[in-house]
Length: 271
Image 1: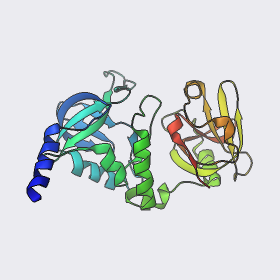
Image 2 (image 1 turned 45 degrees about the vertical axis):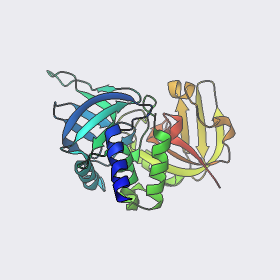
Image 3 (image 1 turned 90 degrees about the vertical axis):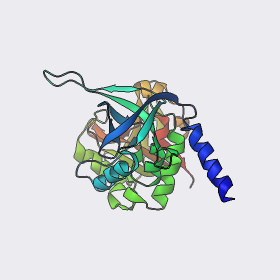
């Protein structure tokens, strides 16, 4: 039996990384990890891990998230695979070339020769959370299920009070304090749970007003291209539904809100 098990593992390793529907990319070796969601390859390429984010800076659990990523990936062979937009190009600083990074799913070859999906490991351990984007969401459904299991078990970051889903009232307070535009990159990204009091859908946008906030109301909003491309729950039918939403918090015309960028960011929960 042991010989058969060993043979099975060797065959699995020989098959290489199981990238499924993703597009195969470059192979390289990792030399450094930044925060819990960014790698540097030996040729100098920065890699943002697609569909996830991790605590960073002085945030709770940031050091642990980076430690998990370092332990899993640094000095190991990796394969990049793509399921959406492949490159991020940042605004260049004065006198410098534009900053660029790959946006990829990463498959790591372990010391024993087994390939594993890095995003899967990080989310399962509670070292990162799911953040799908309109142009990168190929595996968000699978990652959300892994995150839900980690959160229920209070693994990693989910044992920290700071990362528990916010109530509607707490989300409204956080949005008001941030005073950000939810379309900006520095807007706080949070998970909110509550019930929709009134779902209104217009020609180019939707506004889902939530129960539980003082005046002014707190709403989940989706508009523009994100609204046009929406392929999730029928927004007009969600009055009374209990939901879990994730996205950047902001304020518009003095009203706090959470901006939905993609349908994977809105989960309808059972009562």
